[in-house]
Length: 136
Image (spheres, rainbow, N blue to C red):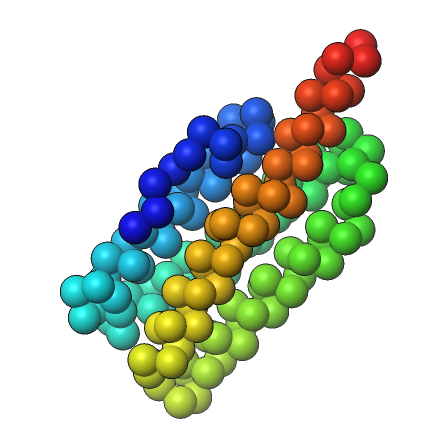
């Protein structure tokens, strides 16, 4: 289980709320894996991720465009790579079935996304907003 840290907040409630929603789903999946129920939970988690990425990445990329975020293109590339990973995992589960390997890969992907992307990359968006607010 991963606890939400205030340092994950970027200072935009809509985005922070979406990030907390992702952490909640991630913890549900971790809990299922811990209780030997990861195989049952993986398809639900992948469905959630597909819907989540459309809404969340759209919101985040629109925000970045609105604030003239200098690293928008790189951020979009990272989002696209995450979506591709989710789609590949989904395809693997459809064609090969759920395996221990697929649950481990999803666990690792989600943990890495939370710990690296949200707490580092997305934090730059908050920093950009804060610096623009100071300049006003």
